[in-house]
Image 1: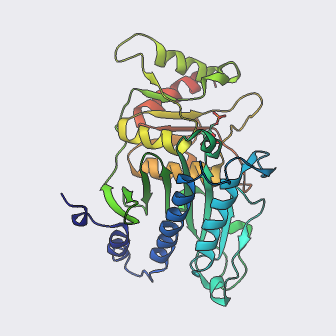
Image 2 (image 1 turned 180 degrees about the horizontal axis):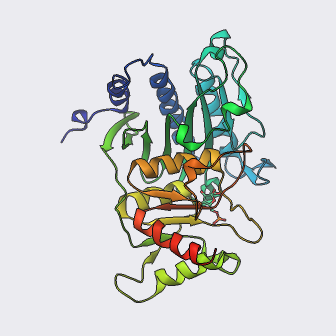
Image 3 (image 1 turned 120 degrees about the vertical axis):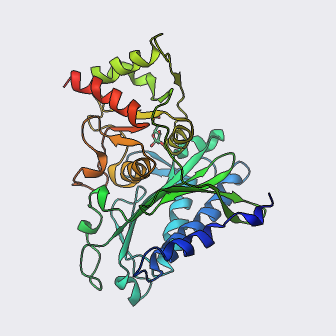
Length: 336
Ligand code: P6P
């Protein structure tokens, strides 16, 4: 079927805007800004191998991680696209120690949305040409419109998200997002610069046979995680499962959502809260997972119910096919 028969992301955003009775079009403009920024980042990611922006930016972010030049560039691209359209009053990013108040014009203060973003997750994979991603999370501000945005606008539980999604810069580039009415995936035709609805109503298979975890950390895992890994490897019933770990959350999540699977980044002795950040990695992925019929917890608690206390706080992360997450939770409960 010719691609012009597929709905474009732009048409989809407008169609869905009509689902919101009192929509002012602001969320549509916000999603369109993310769509535009993703195309610019996609162009930079695709040429990283030849452009001289590969490698390290020479400084570190708040996570104490080496900032890749593309991390910095992707962050600037998304912040620029969002700031210039008066669609958000504030942005929090993995790459910025503090949140950013948007002053683009006096109207920005009147915008009712804030965005939290991991502009280039898995960026250490850039130099070895492995898929990376952008993760975004959108909330309504809780402070008075017209006043300066405040930390409390960002420290909201994941259940309050208005929308969330990711861009996966893989063998093809896709945007996958939800506004609370299911999950839809759009694939970019780079020759046209147009995203087409390629994966309508994405659903996590209820069960799966893929587990994604960095087994190099096995000796440091909680006993419940060790026991779950051994369960996955045992020759019994539909097991052993397959181990697949790309080292890029968006890519592992995307594959597991299509094929069925579980992704785990647990706590370890050195990192008692795990590695992934609650606000701009775990909450958006948890919103998507639940909207697709999957499950997402910290091993015990629903991720979306966790009360945030810090912008860059970390939480252990168990996410994927509902029955696989529930089985992993059983092993965690036995050791509690
Ligand atoms: P490790 C990338 O830095 C990331 O945040 C996720 O995208 C990825 O799944 C994880 O960390 C990889 O971490 O410790 O296994 O290298």
